[in-house]
Image (cartoon, rainbow, N blue to C red):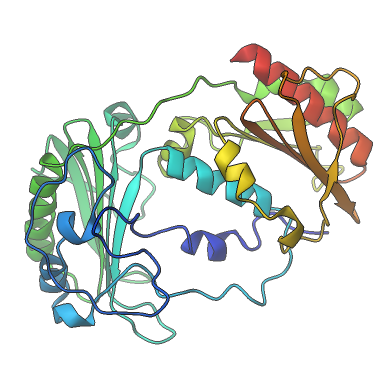
Length: 370
């Protein structure tokens, strides 16, 4: 049975780092050039220019390394050798949601062979004060975050053990600023001084506020009857994978803001591996068109299918595009209609006709709800 998320962590590494802006250095260069410092200056109303907003000199100073040792962005990561996974479509949808959320990140690393080297990651999420207040301080960190006088509200912690470094979560106006410095023997004073410079930088940057689409929640999209009749689940339970206010919701805030709906239901203890997973992302036409569905490292060989005349379908005038397939106990249907990307993945007794019926019903209800 294919397990969801097998390749997720490795692939998401490729999605992190800095989004290149005018005059900035690319996120993942084809080679690994060193970076040079740039004079700090504000960049208004454009994509975050990492080399300007997060100057290399400051990063080198807090890490205690020469500027020329830094690389802006992660070294190219290899994903060969990972087991095929049905989760790859969902990972791509989550990546597209992150891009649409307005969150932007800058990452500097010091290469250290196979081991993670020292690094600095600065992330900003505009217009997110409500979510900052809802989720901070992180009480599930294992090392309590302490309040500190930075920005309009802030919490920080430095720690050793399995992970060495410091991190701060700061509210600057309505922008959520996250700063992480990974290094051996972190010093609180040096970290807080560096964090203060980042607060000053972010105060002078105008970030574009993304549109926040309307949402439809999991119980609206698939009913208990759907999960029993078409999902073939027994005593189904579940819903939103990361509910608002849950311990891990802080990590999902950008995708949630972008309208990503991620639901999972499972049978009761008699068949706990029988699962229905539903993922929906609005305004996803560009992300859909960039997908090479036939080249995914998935046990399911997705094939183009015509769902135009499926029973109960309520497609828009522009129609629907779809791919589907099964492998052993997994089936998957992924479709685009009206700019909405929707994917249903089943594990267990549900067959392709069942997965298709779930996708058709979920889309119709989503369209009605939003």
